[in-house]
Image (cartoon, rainbow, N blue to C red; front, side):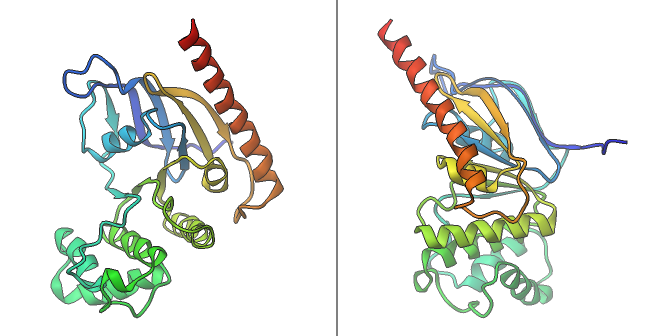
Length: 254
């Protein structure tokens, strides 16, 4: 008997236009993310990846269609950690706990637990400027997890990190998503990163933004960025991106 999967996020024929612009940012996007799935959105700038995240987070309302999360709690991470520089690590995470209604007497223990989860213990009294870029993103992840989110939205959260730190963060988010059974929607421009992390990679196409194709990544975990099988699947996606670019050039020249 096949296992029954439950959808965590559903984009039901979603279109998006900003203000009075005649141009659509998204056009008729139909996409389902299963519960516990790690889905990567890949594509050139302007194809609507970040707009999809904003819609899933409830920061925007679609012009047409609907986004359904079934009442699941959502957390979001950005390329910048967004930590408040005047607060310590403890204060940044405590703010999320307070907004989530966690009693004050429980917060210190919860903060210590969350910092253990992201493998950054003992930094509660440091301020953001005292941390490396990778450490700041770990704190940002701990702050997001403090919201007890079930769906984690990530908008190029590792793009500004050096290669070594980025690889370490790949390992961490893969581990944490698995341990907590999180549904992850991850935006990236990096083809290898998409294959390294995703159970499935959805390739977006601009003008207006829409789903072009998808690739199931049927590789065992844990994975490494330099795995040959990742390189093979990344090459498939690069070819598809090149085909998109060629079609756009021909259309512009016609």
